[in-house]
Amino acid sequence: MKFLRQDSAGSMWPVFGLTRNLSILLVVGRLAFVSAQDDPNVAAGIRPASLRDPVKKEIARQLVSAAENSSLNWKAQYGYIEYNVEGNPKENRGYTAGIIGFTSRTHDMLQLVEYYRRIASDNGLVRYLPALRKVDGSASREGLGKEFAGAWKQAAKDPKFRKAQDHECDRVYFTPAVDQAIADGLRELGQFAYYDAIVMHGEGDDANSFGGIRDAAIKKAKAPSQGGDETAYLNAFLDARKVAMKAEQGHQDTTRVDTMQRKFLLEGNLTLTPPLVFEVYGTPFEIKAPAPAK
Image: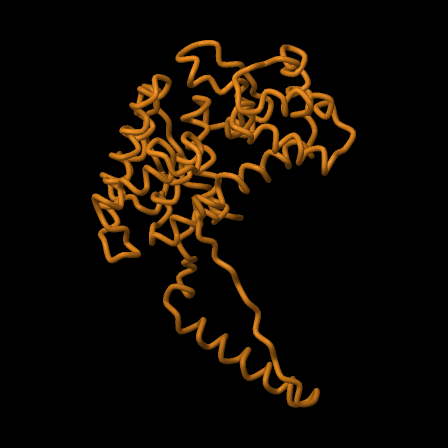
């Protein structure tokens, strides 16, 4: 599935001489200043609804961490790594690691380590690249094992590896999800619902991937960009998400939808405004409003 992306273009100013250019710039700047003063949203400090807002992005990271690692402390997950030894072998994603659950089977772990090599060529994970390429697409751990897990945990102490995880999380999951949600006319809760779905199911087009989930939702309710009601559409999306989760043995517990995302939706909190009180797998969490800036 291809996601829609928003591009920005700068304006070109004609050259009529230095004095005339300066006059034009001063007039336009004055008009922009007056317009900003007259805009009630700008005057109230209201920014466009986007999960890219640093506060909202931090909330999104905490919510995913609560669901993936039973902790709001997402920064503690850079060094997380484990091999999936339980459940349906067909669903075994091999090693799962890092802040978003990069896996050795689904290519994103390989891409991460390759990117890490580009920004830090001399690192302890480089020697595992041949093995990661070999097991890519399978649940095999041939050439990896305990030494690889130890090297991952050691690499997590490197700021460049943490930077690499942030970069790949944004590139593969966060940015595509937010771009598509904005294109569909969704605010922060909907943007997060897309993000969480892509993290778990991947961005493909089959019924149990993000693309299939979104298609199923659109068949039931119009997205806001199509003139539909945002709440009705998100209910349809979460319904379709649960169907996809139930199709996998390892995702039978749907509380990350039921007692997190659906709870926020029922409360009418489409902007993910804290405090956020929710449960995942029976564990209660609360994300409090950030302290005012001093």
